[in-house]
Amino acid sequence: MAEQRSERIAVVGGGVIGLSVAWRLAADGHRIRLIDPAPASGASHVAGGMLAPLAEAWPGEEGLLDLGSASLARWPDFADDLAAAARLPSGLRREGTLVVGVDSADRAELGALADYLAGLGRGVTALSGREARRLEPALGPSVRAALEVPGDLAVDNRATLRALHAAASAAGVEFLAARAEEVRAGQVVLAESTVDCDAVVLAAGAHSAELHPLLRGRLRPVKGEILRLRARPGALPPPRRTVRGPVRGRQTYLVPRDDGLVLGATQQEVGFDTRVTVGGVRDLIADAERLVPALAEYELAEAVAGLRPGTEDNVPMIGELEPGLVVATGHHRGGFLLAPITADAVVALLRGADPPPQARAADLRRPGGIPCTS
Image (cartoon, rainbow, N blue to C red; front, side, top):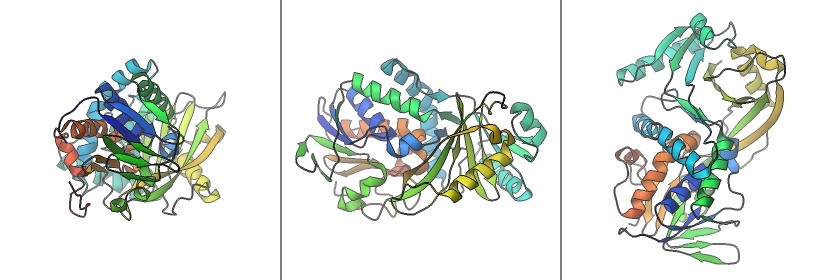
């Protein structure tokens, strides 16, 4: 796209990606209309808020690791800008992450992760269970080993969403409470009208595939159940760091909040079903209690499920689908982590500039990607 200013841009989707893109585009001088029936809801409202590219690294996903690391490096400035623009807390938590293991299989998985990261020149600190409990006294005696990852951070997702909504509003973003039926280059089709514009940014998460034919079959909803626990008077305080790790082969995470913890997350491919299951709640509590036994004394404040937008290779899709239509979706578990670099990439695309080099991993034309028309 040729470099322009004051373009009329419609952003479809009001989760963390859509709000971040809308805010940054408005700050770049564009006239933005954000289309979503309920902004700051959906998967972003449910999310744990981990910013953990190292703790979630996996062999074969080096491009995703580079993308996540580049976005994590942007988070401190992004958070400072957000707090200043919104005049609200950004939600960023800087205490770091502990990846813990319980049984021998879990500890072997930690060792494999440490070796893998060391081979990439990304070291972490191995701890015994006793050393981990010195850092986080709430950890139980079943924790036998840990990796300290101080650079992997977290956010309070709901505080961040409030700040993004406020910052976007202050920057002049117009919010249209409507559901998109279809997106085209320069046009969003609603139930009873259309929104014409110079360009469209499609950032509707798991629902993006319903809105353009080239995305059908390339995105799927991945259900994740989340519990929010509130510390009761007299109970042992929750960990200050994010605690995560395999328990009986299931990935478990506990992300601190000012008044308690968020526990997650189950992972099921059951379409657009967001009902919370008894089995999911049982497994989340049982696994989390093995790591932090004091949780038995906490209040169960909320049980909710969201739909992560998954792609075949777990990498998001960021790029120009056709002239006048940019896609920013498929972020799976990494919506909050990848929000800063996604917003930077979209702003660059709409300026006619090159996105950050790490964003090439999310290029629509990667192997197995989308046959775009641009």
